[in-house]
Structures are given as C-alpha cells and as structure tokens.
Length: 199
Image 1 (tube, rainbow, N blue to C red):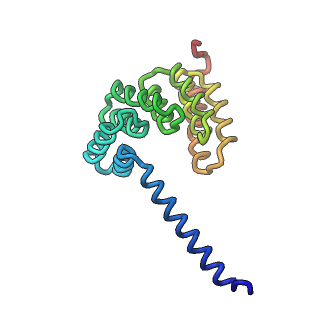
Image 2 (image 1 turned 120 degrees about the vertical axis):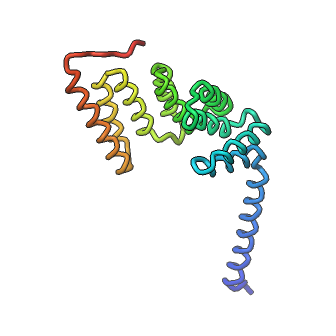
Image 3 (image 1 turned 90 degrees about the vertical axis):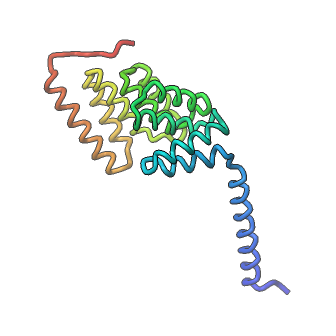
C-alpha cells in the first residue's frame, strides 16, 4: 500500500530542515575568528569607529593576511584619518591575499585617484572590471573620472556614454548623466586645449 502524500511531504520537509540546519552549522563552523571579527567591524563601520578599530585589530591579530580586514582597515585610514600611505599598505596586503576582492579594487582605485596615481589607477580599474561579479559601469565611471582629471574630456565623455549603455540601474544612469553633464561643461571651457595621458 503506497504512503499517503502528506506523510511523504512531512518526511521530506523534515529531511530538508535537517540538511539546512546542518549546512548552517557547517557555514558557521567554517568562519574563522578573523572572519567573525571582520564581520563585526564591517557591521559597525560608520556607526561605531572605536568598535571597528578594536574588531579589525582582533581580526588581523588572528590572521594578518585576512583580505577583508585589510580592506576595511585601508578604508578606515583613507576615509576617516586621511592617512593615505597606511591605507595603501592595507589595500596592497588585501590584494596580495585576495586579488579578486572587488571591494578592495574599488577602494584602492579611489585611493590611487585621490593621490593622483592615475596610471596605476587605470590599470587597477581595467583589471577589476574584468573580475567575476564586478559591476562594470561603476568601474567605467572611475575610468571616466581619471580621464576627466587628466583633462581628456572627450575620452571621459565616451566612457560615460558606454557606461550608461552597460548600466541596468536607473538611479546609477541618472548619476552618470550628471557626471556627463559636468564633463561636457568642462569641455566647453577647454575647447582649444588637448591633454592626453602619457603611456
């Protein structure tokens, strides 16, 4: 005599629930202490900087090569303290541990732009835009910004137009339109001057 459908569904539901709870335990067990302290610091970032520093120091004491902790420490030094040399050291350490970390690439590119290391920033942006999971229009926007700062407004405009075609986010497209408007306004002011990046 076949089992009633309801008892099969109940047994299947129990099995799935057990497998899900087991998977959750495995994931929790797979997190290192450095991961746990990094996640605490990430959660507190912008709200409780004292806790961020404490948790990042713990994370790095357990694993000095932890990519996430080095990335966040780099952001902290760049954004909160303006210590760009220290920020660069932490971003470099993060990239050495995990070269495909998109967050590190994005923040490191911003640091290089802010410190006017445009050649390095361009290389990093081009590398990062090829990474799996990268939001390409965001990196294209950074590339356009670099060309704008180099006064190559035509190239900047071209990249911003491409970025708008690549983007699927209406808010980001509006943001890119504002960026494009600024670049075109600058183009009008510098009509007789040509600047090019030196390779």
